[in-house]
Length: 141
Image (tube, one colour):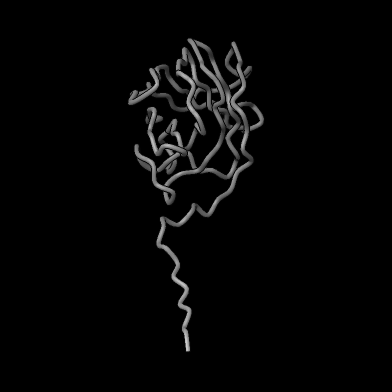
């Protein structure tokens, strides 16, 4: 008689929220009629990442995350995450956009879903999922 035992591996639980994943779009100007709420400068760990990030609130209460003077060498499977801390953990992040190319001193914008609490998810991570590599992060203050 043989017995089969199924084992489930223990992983960090995924965040409870899901968002519409976007591709960050190039946008030369900040959103019109928008108020700057929080900002920060990136700390780089890989792929020559540099620049700053600003969180805007427009007149319709839409949240827009904007990268300015952003530079990064291309990597595979790279995403922008909002996080509760300055490092990656499945339990602490929300994936909001995919980065697909080299960027050199450009400005990018991404809309943030309205239900995301920007006081809780106050770190912006640029992270390569495939190689488990943090390219850089910023804290929105």
